[in-house]
Length: 549
Image (cartoon, rainbow, N blue to C red; front, top):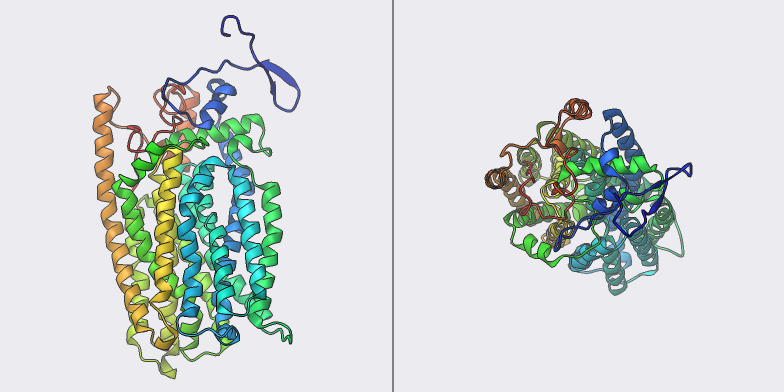
């Protein structure tokens, strides 16, 4: 019923074929800051539209996968391509052409992550306050421009300055990808989507190696080989930024390619996450909640450990393979199987984590593979007859790529509240940047061909992340028990079904029961006022939030 003394607001519905009175919006209780999705659902009569079939939901999911996911894949691909370009040009004599000495090459690898580290707090704030799609497009354009400008650099100082600029703009992309994944997909779908865009690391190793192989054969009197590669990759990235600006929607509520009903379904299906969608409001209580949350620091330590290992291998991988006894171009081509293995292990581990819903155990298991590979590289003598064994060890080390996306997905699935989600991601990415700053500095060209210091450090990091990941689930179990006790105290059921983690068959059955009216108490049946899902609450304060292991 309309508010006395106030005419019902007229609302345009659908594609122009109908005008209906929009339902009256009820103000949120004093002191409660709602998610933007709450306002959207209230404005679009979510109570009537929330009953949708399993087939309708899958159709919407397919449309999201076909529009949003490819853009994320491309964005992460170009970020990794541009970031890794330094590794590709390392074997073409950039140290000699740019007159790099001592640890200057190592610093070119580390400075990018130092810039990302410094920019993470600003990135978190920007992602809360500004439209995500526009942020991603702008960041891609700016870092592509920075890389293209690096083609004009011929000394350490200029290269260092533009690598810092490149890292500053790239600081946006990984947190943006996590934010978009949280914003568009259910928790049970997030691990695989995170694995897909992280698998671009492997695709980059394949495509980047082929690009480098081809561009490295270009002979020029005007430009060094590294300048040609920087210019090519930078301009390609700038072109892609235009496509992102045109096609990337800012949120499910603002997706022009979805109909009004599809938008409602896209938002309504996320209520089960108990995480919110987007608030565009910065909340300092969420910031404090982030820093006082023990699991924030568990993710932080785990990501630092794996990033130290990843940073060193990423910067010195081509040089390590070359020192096995291969030529420059052979070293490039041997990075292609490295990339294939990364793609397979990232997607395979994501599937296992989704299938068995045990990320901690999957991470612990995967960490064994690079540990074995590192031991091989440390113990097998560098003689011509051992090149195959050493290369096998190097390929085992490439399995480390599966750990980072699992940590990204794990922390994202266990964090709620818009500002807290962005702040927790910022802490994680600060850890990632810190590890990647430290990693290359543990290696030095003077340590060739054994690189013992760096490899021993990597082995310690693999063991650390494996042990920690096996212990984190016990703390998450404790938090779930605490929430169950709190629900009992509030007169709710202590046992909740986590609808966001349901498999395909379970979801189909759940939707059938819901439409028949038999799913009282589920997120779909609760009113917006009764449901904590869209109230912009943090996971620690929302007793209905269920942690996943």
